[in-house]
Each structure stands twice: as structure tokens, then as C-alpha cells.
Length: 93
Image (cartoon, rainbow, N blue to C red):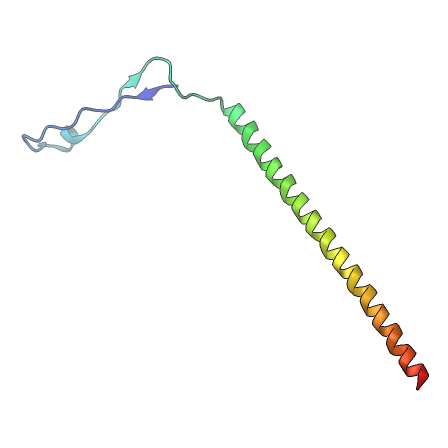
């Protein structure tokens, strides 16, 4: 991988005469880069992070659905009890 060396600041003494005078060029720097990662390793890390987030989301939704199912079962039980009491009152009349 090649790094780019910064250009020295332009002189402020005179304005450039032509567009070619204003152009800049980059010079490649040879040597070991301090922060260099393999593209494959970054890809695998990104996919692993994505799968972890996805599984966490599925687990959270699963738990919430279980809580909703439990509340629904309780509500059905209470409604059945109330209906049974209402039937008993109607039969006594």
C-alpha cells in the first residue's frame, strides 16, 4: 500500500501565472504503514458483527413475543372466568 506525502504549503509571494503552475502532484512514500489491515479480515469482522447484531435482535424479539404470549394467555383465562361467572348469573335468574 502506498501512502501519500503532504505537499509543502504554497508560497504566498506571487500568484501562479498558468493553471499548470497551480497543479499539485502526489509523491508515493515507500515504507511500512502503521495502520494497515487486511481487506479480508475487515470483511470477516464486519460480517461477524452483523450476525451478532442480528442474533441479538432475534433473541430480544423472541423474548418479547414470549411475554406477549404469556399476557395473552392470562387475558384469555380472565375472560373465560368472567364469561363463566356471567353464565352462572344468567342461569340463576
